Image (tube, rainbow, N blue to C red; front, top):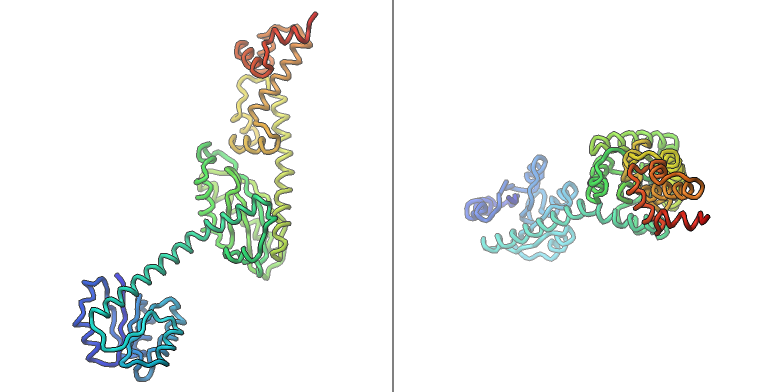
Length: 394
């Protein structure tokens, strides 16, 4: 229920306001009726009504002087001023205070209720707008950063950053990416909503950070810290941040994480360079990891039960993340790479040896020769017999 505070130095008017208007049936609660501005300010030390209706001319402290003091404490407070006569100077001052309305007495009860209802609507609209800005800004901000990420920050506009409440002018910071790994289910890891929820959770914990879904297994982050702080101290903050995020991801969805930090920046213009440094570090590590995965496949392709999950487990990776990483670096999937390795080895054995088909099938990881024959025909677009005739005509 919307709460009201009424202020008037006239005792008769105060009694009339309380007795002659059924505030509750109109959806309002008249919390308190103050005799002057001093009384009202004292009441406001422990209460915060939604709307204030106040006489404008009162002894000791008039409505304008009182309103100025209240606005300092509650800048969004709604005021409705009442005056015994039209006074242009008072009306002008009320306008400067963004008063909701300025009414001239006498005013009927019905008219007063109508004005208060309009003020309530304005109050609700303000609250709604505030909620949208509070809850919606992170989403809009992430969308903007996502566009910057796709263009590798080539379109970075410092003025636009500030429009999205990203002000790094007085801060030290860095960028980076978090590659999600671990035992998260395939459906969860591939869910966009899941990653967005993780970003929401992390931003609730780290108010000076922004987390943005980069892909189904990666989160980009912008980490900021107010100056003054040395690079050395900032690095210690980052170490703590990394440890806490890893712990939180594990609690949230049993996720593991690998961090790649960019360079530290002291001014907005250095943000792009920081991002590039983070990408270089990730690329270096990813290339090395992909080469290790390739080597493991070369060494174990003959194992019939070699699966994507088994390969991923060897490197303590989620198999979805491993597939995504491998495809990004090589342009092909881990499964296709495994098939290609087996087929190329089978091709070599068919040309260089006289081994039976079932023997070659077993040597390249196929338990059933018919499965091997079908795979071979699909890969080379010819049967094994046709292939041998072409490459061993004698």
